[in-house]
Image (cartoon, rainbow, N blue to C red; front, side, top):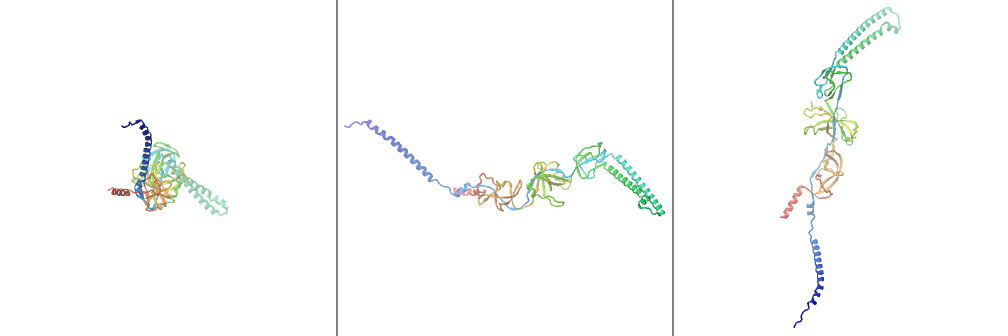
Length: 415
């Protein structure tokens, strides 16, 4: 006969083994996790150098450069001013009795063309009076010459020795000189009267454009009064300012017939697209511009209103500001590079063997558009034209064709 099992005696033993089993299981889980992590890192595939280069090479555009002879330009701004300007003034007084139609602001007048006429009656009368006085003086001179001849005959008949001083008195030499002087004075008075009469006609001293008129028909004018303003239409000047550092690159017209730097003028907002005017750099003004502290130069433009040789070209307007490109002295054996390809601290990015090279360059001259490189670049160098966010010397580069070739290779491997 079996004995009954005491359940209360068994339960306390199970309670003691439970915590040990939990700790053991947790420890095993941690060990297995660590082993799995170590295995993952140990068996991770590593990328080869060629694959990394293909994926990280920067796509760029390049342009080849060439050394050669170039003529740089200096770009400046200038104001159109007259090369020849006068203010007409009256040299006689009187009433304006005639006014030419051409004597109107904006119109052109020929050299010698009559613009105004002052009432000449008074000056004609004065001239007639002076001519009469001249005739009278000449008559008196003839009379005195006759009296001198009579006196000489009488002196010869006497045959006496007379001192030289007394001879002059006897022969009436002082009276003769006095008569001659009166003739000269009368002739000068006639000439003066003729000038005054001629000055009643106001004429243009050279081919000109009328800028202003200050009198009208019937006006009373006095000597020295301003009548109007004229400017010559044969030449205009463009007065421009140039940085002092660029003066050595410019050639001025030192003498008539000597060469001078050619200049191209632009007036982008006024002239039709593509139209320009030509001029010459003629003179360096020996004074700095007081505002900009730059050198003042004069550019001469022939036929500025396009009336003769420059017919069909846009006319220049006095007082306007135009842009001028002055041809500088020629640069030999240099590289011409677009200004935006010149990087910080006068460096240039160049592609060498599909790698980025940062070149230090020496700049001979630079303007708004180009930089002319003396040293640092050679013919055939490939200058990078792409703006890169990250620039590291030796970084790998690729061109558009290289990218397409890499993609084709990867497609072949996938197949």
